[in-house]
Amino acid sequence: MNQQERLLMDIGMVDFTMIELMLYLDTHPFDKTAMEYYNHYARIKNQMEKEFSQKYFPLTKNLAESNKEWKWGTAPLPWEMEGVCS
Image (cartoon, rainbow, N blue to C red; front, side, top):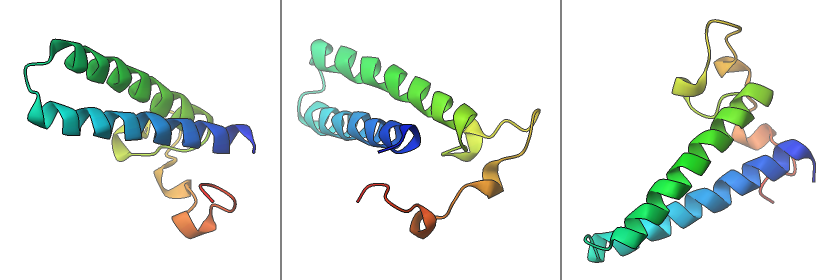
């Protein structure tokens, strides 16, 4: 597994954690500890996505930095990403 694949997998794991926390918070909206965990993982995910976008290609349009080079259209399509998430 190369660095790009590893970083994508790590982003996916943090995203999964955030989804689970959101589901928990839907039924426990006043749990301050769970909200702190959610905010913590949201910060981590934002940083990871920013790092990935700077090294490889933007994962979302808001991470495409147009002041340097427009990379939004250069990202591989899902079926072109050999070996990722398999």
